[in-house]
Amino acid sequence: MIKLEHLSKSFTDGASEIHALHDVSLEIGPGQIFGVVGASGAGKSTLIRCVNRLETPDCGRVWVDDEEITALEGKDLRRARRKIGMIFQQFNLLSQRTASENIAYPLELAGVQKTEREKRVRELLSLVGLEEKARAYPAQLSGGQKQRVGIARALANNPKVLLSDEATSALDPGTTESILSLLKDLNQRLGLTILLITHQMEVVKNICDHAGLLEDGRLVESGAISDLIADPSSRLSRAFFPPPAGLRADALAVQAVITFLGDAAEKPILAGLVRQFDVDVNILGGNIQQIGGKRVGQLQVEFKGGQTQAALAYLRDLGLRVEVYQ
Image (tube, rainbow, N blue to C red; front, side, top):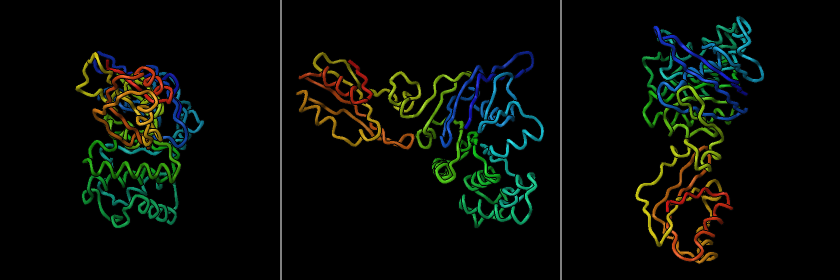
């Protein structure tokens, strides 16, 4: 649904040149929720603004729904943008327009007749749970309500792609959770492809099924969340599960961290391990999280005696991620 090919973008700041993006290539499939995470200044906003050509890349190409956005100009570009909705950190609502009038604005620009506009606005208000706020002005709305209006406005023209530019960064944790829940629901009900940028790992863990890490304008890694978690060398995986504290070398024991993905998080794997390999297993700590829509468990364990190395190999053969700390 979204394809970036060798994208680069620079800006001039006085006498110096800022390289915001360096040769970024990325593919996002239909219906995915793809999170691009990175620190401030990593190039995240530039990347997302190149997708709908709010920024024009210096080189490289962008496709959305099999149409090359970077090859379009004028009315063709405006037409293509209608299938790309966008929501912003600071909401960007028109203060002198009501919630309904803000949502109707892109429909007015598209030349939609008044009767049809009004019907569509009612549908969208219902979709985001704001029917009772139709006549409220932005100043009368909470931050979460403003963002719901922004989401409804972004969906006015039935886009196939929704871009989210730090859309929850200005919201408190409770409101952030409700907005992310709404986006996930819209993704499932409407089949929306969502590309969001954020510096908050909790956002990626809560809603995304795919993710990429952007550093200094370069895409360091990307992929399905489940694949990244299963890869001990993944930087994003380390951010999801920081190395536990307190592990120590012990001549008589092997300490390890085992990550269970999907159904494996529910199975009594360690109980079978004790019987099969005659090892003593001491659980030092652990937790189960919901990441990318899947249950992911992590156990910090200590093995003693028996066939410890065979037991560790068995766990890896099951597809579990095993990191040994001794």
